[in-house]
Amino acid sequence: MTIQDIDFGKEVAGIWEQLTAYEENPIEKHRVIPPYSISSASIKLVIIGQDPTIKRADRRKEIDCTLNLNKPGAIREYVKRICSKLGISIEEVYATNLFKYFYTFPPARTFPILKDHLQPNLVLLEKELSTIPQCPIITLGEPILKLLVNDNAKVRDCWGYDKQTSKTSEQFSFIQAKENKLNRSFFPFCHQPSFARIPFYKETLDQYIDFVKSKLV
Image (cartoon, rainbow, N blue to C red; front, top):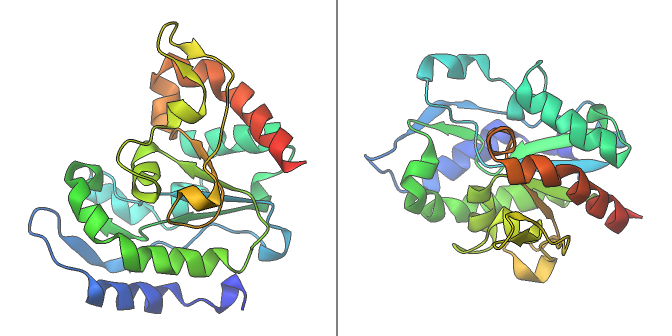
């Protein structure tokens, strides 16, 4: 099976049938956001985001690709920077979301709902990743890290955050397959808004990417 063999519309519709509906944050069951991939034959990096939901409902119609990587913007530039440091092109990225549909409100506000909706979405994600078994994986954002690991997981811990100095100790790490629900090793990254806003991530990004690159040799 290849990625092209997966009918995401059909898969997600099947997932919706399994999920409990919550009035606090209903699912918008009319659009499925497909993964970003130029050519599955040349994939060298997988990026996993959490979901495509944004606060302004009127802007959701503009989103037709995971992370909006098919359009210019801050997230695309952030991903391009990561790729450049790793020595690959953004055209060699496969980007997907754990949840491939919109919630009414940004779902980090209703995190217990995400946890309740996790399992069938995780099954689909594992199915996707099984088609590219040797490809390195990075995740974007802390909420997805907590979903895949546990409620105490923090991106900054993998980036060697030192509470005394608010700098990195350079004791970098990654999440091993046996430590997470995905059963694949991955490198947790902050999402672009956190990178833009938090000095620690700005100062440490290049060093962590160098660490990732050293593990891919």
